[in-house]
Image (tube, rainbow, N blue to C red; front, side, top):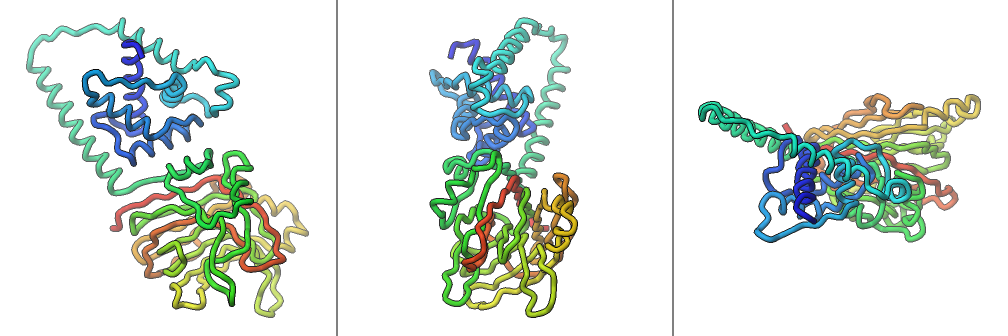
Length: 391
């Protein structure tokens, strides 16, 4: 990279960094910050700039030793420029087909070099105003650093829109899959920008001689005791026992510790009483391997199957569904939102006290240990996890 381009690259990287983090680049990125930077660029542009590359660029710009250089590709420079310039969401394929001349990088570079020519060095009239400005800048840096430290170290926010479901990208974002089913795990990206799981045979507690386990359970670690999390579905209609999907909180990944399961599920079992077939929000707690029976703490109908047959328009209420869990110490709040429009308001299902410290959160789809129930797809289009210090 020639010197004028290197200057433009450094300016571009600093602008992108400031847009992401809200302050100027002063020290190299940590691994966590690099992954956050990577995800925000991807979510805003649809383009991939590897987190390790971002980390290396920050080190080069902040404190590169004499003679060291970085040579980002033109595609990388264009992706950063797209992020800085609020370009419309696209993809690598679309750029290759329609914009393979990397217009955003060249537009940014042209503007940068023009601005250099127009800059004029102001005359210093006295040393006092300069000292005042210097002290002011120093105070701003200190205050900004304290606010940023408080923001990023007292709480952390992770959002996944599932634009990239490759194994490497999932791992880079902190996900890992347990008990993958070869056939159905390969189909996880069959719907664009959504994670597709299937209601395979399995469960997170034993039933008779059945072996406990959930196929294609997508997990990530939870690092703090207080958090809130939510997951969004699209067009999920469970219509046979016990098709369901949702959020699983676990103390360990082998199902020996305590667990909480919140799901959208189908139910037509009513203990012999005459009750209609229903789609429900179900919340179940388990107390570990020594506890044979789970406890159902919430069983809230959201739609009755017979009502759908007489009024098909009710199907619109399942177009967009969301589940949310908020943990504050021992108190758990479980909320649900659903309807024909995206992002409807959450309503509380139940608040429950349960002495548990989840270490993992998982997205799942199952049908229990039933053989005759169909395997159906479940489309997840958003996951959010905010971890925070407990008050």
